Amino acid sequence: MTDVRVSMDPGNRPGLARPATAPWQAKNPRRTAKVVLASVAPMLAAAAITLGFNLDPAIGLILVFLPLQIFASVWVGRNIYGKKGQADAMLVLFTIFFSAFVGVLLVSVIWSVVVQGLHAMSWQFVSQNNTYITPTTSLEFGGVGAAILGTIMIVGLTTLLTVPLGLLVAVYLTETRSPMRNTVRTLVQAMSGLPSVVAGLFIYSALIVGLHIGYGGWLGSLALLPLMLPTVARVAEEALRLVPQELRNGALALGAPAYRAFLQVTLPAAKSGLITAMILGIARVIGETAPLILTVNNANGTNVDMSQPMAALPTYIFQYVRYVYDTSVQRAWGAALMVLLLVAVLFTAARIVSGSSKKAKKPAVAKAASDKRK
Amino acid sequence: MTVETPHLRAKDVNVWFGERHVLRDVNLTFPANQVTALIGPSGCGKSTFLRTLNRMHELIPSAGFAGEILLDNKDIYAPEMDPTQVRLNIGMVFQKPNPFPTMSIKENVLSGLRLSGRKAKDAEELVETSLRRASIWTEVKDRLNDPALSLSGGQQQRLCIARSLAMNPEVLLMDEPCSALDPGSTRRVEETIMELSPTMTIVIVTHNMQQAQRISDQTAFFLAEDGNPGRVVEFGSTEQVFNQPIDPRTNDYVNGHFG
Image (cartoon, rainbow over all chains, first blue to last red; front, side, top):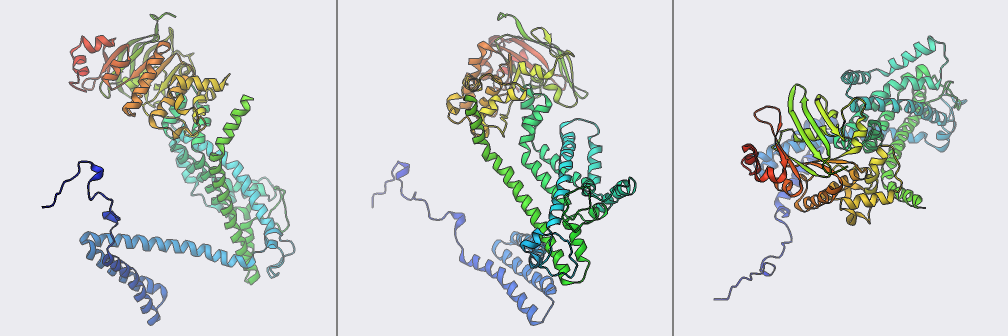
């Protein structure tokens, strides 16, 4: 007999080397092959049938591909994991199929705007205004410069007015114990159902018809306010609600008056949520057309006087999409692409601002400290 | 002020939440520069009582209160008293460490001053002495500008103690300050309490009998029986409460027969 002595030193025992693969990472080629087959075969078969019988692609997708894929997934699921695998395969299949469906819809909207809008895009289209331009004018002339400026000014003024107001509503809803909170919350929610054309009509009838004030950019800002307010207030409320109560108590226990506890502890802790509230609010109103048609009217030239009619991107789109001429419709597509870009730029900028301020904070504090020492 | 002066006194304290009577006729005296432990089973109202001592109690909706809390013979619930002033004099450390996440370690220590609208004469020195008194200085002195959340749980709790100490309160209330901490951190917090006790009146709620015996000069045993409001069953020097309790229920509790 060979001498089989096991060392008592645990590090020295034979067979303790770590296996190359953990049990749960072990490869099973047959299983992998089945899964690949079940993922690829129905797609190929459905493509062949759809093309072979010259079916409508939508019918091919829903009536040929989906049943084949369900059958294949359920079969493989059952084959590998038994009955449980069957239900699991269905769930995975439907989750992927329908989320892909929604994803395709979203991408195709963005895709068509980008592809169509790029025809019109050029530096001159971005920078010039709309003076002397008719629906049939070649795309080499004129552009949406004035409309971009007008949209930024009108939505900017709306933001300046609405964000403080929305924040106040959110503070009222989260930081006070007023018995009116539920009423206010319901009213704000009801406001989010207000049709934008009604908001525009209200300003139109009250100020333009009623008080004989001429069309102007600031009236557009007023009309957008009730549309933006519910979004800002609701998202800001959620952001403030997420700040743990312990932090507020911690501040109050240090002898802070409620307003300082809010400004110095709650508000900074909720900052990124509040910036999201602002961005979502802007995104909500930047494409609104009806209120602007009713209150701002339109202008072809560049105008920075907010008491006068101004150009804006949504009204520009509305103006040109009504004609059948290619040049006209392409101008509308170009303006639509500009709206998308504007939102994207704002979104990125806000994310960078809210992200970088955290990193930039440390040096700023260190600097303040060293300044004090001097 | 001599040591014998009752520094903080609770007179006939009764507390309600809504219609529910949760504390009844609590009379306790906290002498200056002594540590008082509040013990008792869960739900007996000891934490609630602690929160009445610096008016944090009134921040709970539906809270009711009757009685007097006398700090240096002045009722902190008197109409002319400002709750924020009360809380400046009577600091509080919570069960769960709650450093301010948007601030650095240093800013957390100075946050009390900023939050009450004051300026530190010598911020650097105040930061150092406060952190030293909370016995965390050596661990953080090289990273005062790091975010407070980069600290471990035990360090965060001692930072919260330092934050309260920076305000130089007369009384420090602690609501189970070690219940979320490991034994090592607990020991350090206890050492901190022992070091603070010659200069500060401390009231601490604890579920840990050994802890109460180790750190406190006097102990109050709270009990709420069969849905009745909580009340103080026994109050005296820690030694007496633990070794020669008068009430049999105290004896049962401190010896671990219930609770």
